[in-house]
Length: 127
Image (cartoon, rainbow, N blue to C red; front, side, top):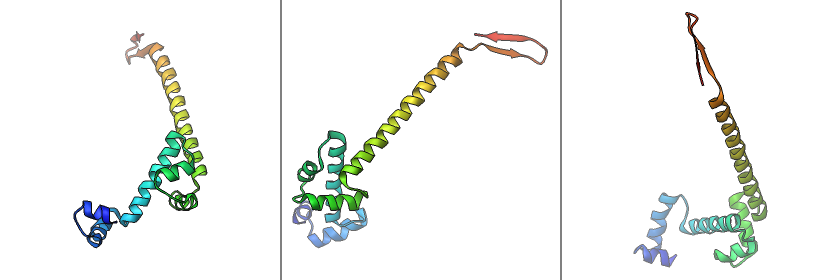
C-alpha cells in the first residue's frame, strides 16, 4: 500500500483512514474487487479461461482466485460466466421478439382503415 499512499502524497495510515469512508472497503479489498471485476469482464467478453484471467489480473494462485471469486460473485468462475451468458442471451432474445412483435403491430396499424361514426350518423373513413 506504499505506492498508492505515495501517489496520494499521504501516509499509509492516513490513506486507510480516508479511503474507507469513501468506498466502504479497505484499499486492499478495493484492489481485490477491481481485479475480480476485470477478470470477470475478460472471461465474459473475451472468452478468456479462468486460469489465464487470474494470472492476467495479478493473482499468483488460481485456487485463491477461485475462492475469492466465489466469495464475491456467489459461484465459481465457470458457472458464473455460463449464467451471465445465458442471461444475456435471454435478454437479447426478448428484445428480438419484442422488436418483431412491434414491427408486425406497426405494419398492421398503418394498414388498417380507420372508420369513425359521429353521433349524427356521419361516417368518415381514413386509410
